Image (cartoon, rainbow, N blue to C red):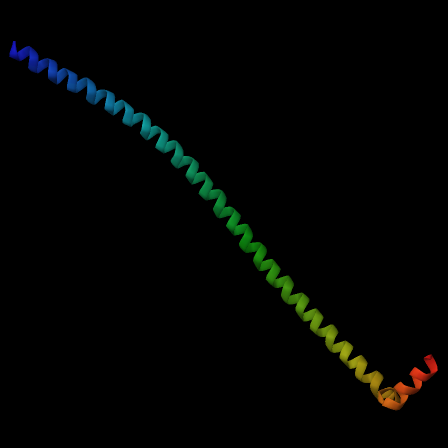
Length: 105
């Protein structure tokens, strides 16, 4: 009788262990699926970051070009202003400005 009781307890433990193992197997499958999704998301994130880095490099290059172009145009504008001032020395005097105001009024 004791033998059958011990065997019944061991059988119940075996059934419970089997059920627990099946549940853990199902959870491991879910974890693997989540891991695959996570891996895909990381791959997409990595490619997006690469594209962002490339865009930033292009913007920096374009920004430098724009700044250089603006600097050249500012320098050219200053040279033109200096040439105009040099060719019309009377344009800088206060008398000339006052006479132009009188004519305009």
